[in-house]
Each structure stands twice: as structure tokens, then as C-alpha cells.
Image (cartoon, rainbow, N blue to C red; front, side):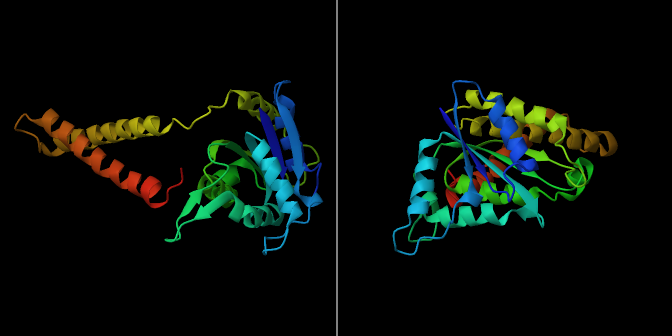
Length: 253
């Protein structure tokens, strides 16, 4: 197994780079790791002419089983280095149909972990979500290319500090160790639908229970039959809509 750390930061040893190094440190000894520091490459889009830089980067991506996408968050989104990398690699990561649908190409079923850092504290980031767009952009690009997400890590509170947060470093090492046990296939779809069913069942039980308690709307004694049929019908309709928009319409897998 090979892990590729893709660093899109202007400092190789900055906070983002140090958190990425912590993930690499946590990797088991039998895992092959390579750092891809984007600032060392002049990355330009394909224009119909030979592009040896993109050819080199494409080969590194092909040879790796897991990508670690590490970028600081600037102005509420990922760095220009990382965005330029994703933009220029797009024609090699996905293929387009005549209907303009984006389908996975050569990197389908590889895995990735997202890592970012920001000036704000963890509490501020929780409420404001300054790093949300960073993760959304990475997810949009990589899931569109057919990759499977492992997790995401945020290193907050970097403003005015000289050393990374020890707790975040430990978290990075922890995930480095877990990357070796990643699943080969994304079999979480069934699990997600089961979780969705359970959430609908619980919320429907609370809602209908309150209706019965306050208004007595199920006085005919058919509460459980009404409850069961409502949950099943609502679940089937909602699951069908979600399946259409996530699998059939966008075809992310």
C-alpha cells in the first residue's frame, strides 16, 4: 500500500505541513509514503501540447492507494495551490458524457483524507464553518472522480501560535495508523440507509406520540399500524429521492 501526501501550502514546514507530517509519522512501517509538495511544481492545464508535469503528477496519483489532501484555508476556502492542482488535473480525473455528466475515470475506488488549518478557534469554526467550503471543494472534486472519503481533520487556532496543537498532532498520528486498515470498497451505503430509517422511525414516534398525547388523534386504537405505515411510506419516498439525486443524477460512484 502507498500513501501520497499532497501539500498545497506556501510553507513546507508550516502548520499544515506539520500536521501532514504527523499523519505520515503514524503510518505503519510497512506503508510506503511519499510527499507531493505542490509548490515545487509549475502546474499548468493541458492545452493539447505535451505536459510532462501533469504526466508526472498523474503517475504519482496512479501509484498511490490513499491521497492525503492537505491545504490551509484562506478566505474561507482552500489554497490557490491546491485549487490550481485540482483544476488542472480535472480532465485526467473524470470523463464527460455528451450530456455533460461527470463520471469517475482512472482513480475510482481510491481513498482520500482531507486536512486543513485555519486561524479561527475550534469553537468559532464550529459556529461559523470557515473550513466548510475547503472540504466541500475537495469532496466535490474527489468524489466526482470516484474516490472514497476516509475522514477530515481540522487544525484550528493557528493565528499567533508558533507550535501546532499537541492534541491535533496526536489526532493526526491516530488517523495515520488507521489508514492502513481502510476498506477496499465503500460499503457504507447500506449502513447509511439503515441509519436514515432509524432516524425517521425515532422522529416519527416522537412526533406522533406527542400528537396522541396532546390531541388524541389516534383514539381508534390503530396507533402502531398508522405509525408503521407512515414510517415505511415516508422512508421509501425519501430514500428514493436521495438515491436519485446522489447516484443517478450526479453519478458520483
